[in-house]
Length: 137
Length: 229
Image (cartoon, rainbow over all chains, first blue to last red; front, side):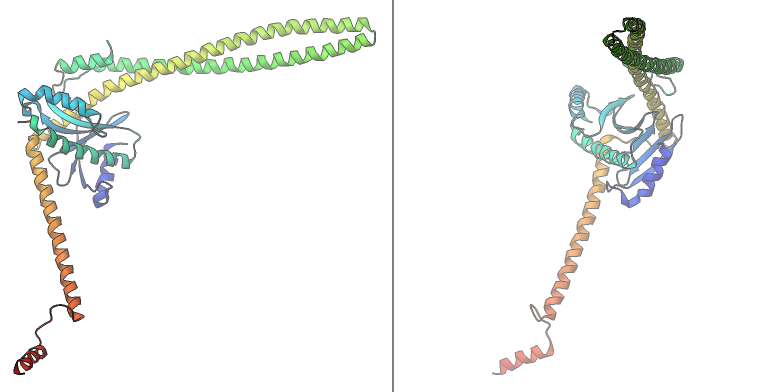
């Protein structure tokens, strides 16, 4: 599995995706190949997908540390830890000063698995921002 | 230090700057080499095990064969005794004694092969677990590295395209607005659809002469006639 195969698959799906979402893929070149996947009408929350030796990582940036109300940061962390298990397929993490949610799949996942993962990740991201906006500036 | 701890220290230490390697790539290479070495040892141990197991099977066959021969010769000895041929019985007994000492030697060899095989099996299992564990740790290091490189690629992409990550709340508002627009469009389409179907129903009713009818010349005439009466 590599990002180009995934991009081709997702682009070919067009209106026929299981999730009802339309994906648009844009490869970003760098030391590690990254695929920027946007869901139509939800362009503000792109998913960044990269493939390592044994897994496929899908990451969506949520918000930066500077967007968190200083007095709410502890409460927010607690909520994130508590929500980590109930939230289907995705987990919270932090990259640099950005909070993210991500999903990791086996390198042997099928296209259907990947598509499902992307759909769930995107829905989770929107819901989480909505539910946690009380902690945000 | 565990790999977890090393990664944690590296991240906390601010090794998140673009281009700064989170884990010494030299250390990663050494670790990869160690895993390859361990795998080579494992392959060799498995080969040794195959050899020992083959010897074990051969020894086991020998032991069975000798046991059968002993039983066979004991039968001969009894038959010789039955016939009163003491000399022949003694000769057979000597043969049995030789077979029994051979059996003891082979049994000893078999036991030793079995011991070796079990030890090697245990070793292989342990080494396999060890290699699996090394690989898991290596995967953690490599994933951390890969995410870091991916992040720098994403950041570069954002700064080169002059776009930036939006504030989370703004993003949500925009997405919700688009969703609302979509929902509104859907609703409007549904409304239109239902109006159309209402119209067609009306038309059908009219055709059947049910409900409001057109003011036709005939109906006007009927009304005027009624007034005249």
